[in-house]
Amino acid sequence: MRHFLSAADAGNIDELAEEALRIKANPLANRQYAGKRLGLMFMNPSLRTRISSQVAALNLGLEPIVLNTSGDSWQLEFADGVMMDGNKAEHIKDAAPVLGSYFDILGVRTFPSLRDKEDDYSEHVLNAFVKYSGIPVISLESATRHPLQSLADIITIKEQMALQEIKRPKVVLMWAPHIKPLPQCVANSFSEWMNAWRIADFVISHPEGYELDSTFTGNTTIEYNREKALKDADFIYVKNWSSVRDYGKILPVKERWMLTQEDFRNNPHAKVMHCLPVRRNLVLSDEILDSEHSLVTQQAANRVWSAQTVLSEILRGNF
Ligand code: CP
Image (cartoon, rainbow, N blue to C red):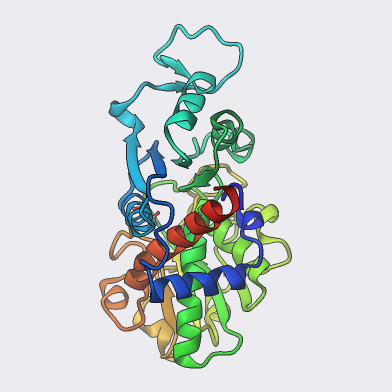
């Protein structure tokens, strides 16, 4: 593995998740890369990604160094050929090679503008780090994807499949309400990974107008009727995202979309997933988050094994 930016970099997803479970069982087994440095550059806030990546690096003997760009660093210019007479003091063409000289691997978290779909979906910010840093780059969440989260989600589902003896689960990605327009990246990425994994019957359910980009959903069944979607579901992945069609907008929705205890009457074994952070009683209710249905803490804990597996694969392939 050279870079980790999408499901296409994962190779065989089931084998990668199996490897993660082996690492989870013996996290300090491979510390041969002591002395290598991991740069972690955050252009947006983070709790899980920041800490799980650091823990993963330390487990491998790597030294992680975090750079938060808001306030801690110069604002970066990504456009070519512009006169830099505004508030951006440094060009990516100058900053990225410098980071490449300090680190062996670079993790980068970017964020979409939610104003210009073409610009966001081009991933020009993440791609600029790949182009100019000269070292392997890991997406810590980008404008359109969150692959470390998706790998942790699949690790979590695999663990539960073994515990519950489920051969082929039904997995539903279900839209939920929110007060702010949120990116589509977690939903895009989960769809991309589920379609590449091919181990589950995968359904996406959302109100009309919230269709995701077909690059990520492919031939996935879209079910606008949430009750139909939830029937026989083993895993319900709850997530808000803003509209792709009316790019970055929140559309009016009349029906109830927040999951409640009532939704589990016919499938009491079903598990609920969310990447966190989650706004309680807006996206998911206290009664669900505090119940045995919830896997959110396990998902977040598995972020360490997702990051450690990806770091191990990159180290093995490049050093
Ligand atoms: N799920 C996730 O990426 O969480 P953070 O934004 O806290 O890193």
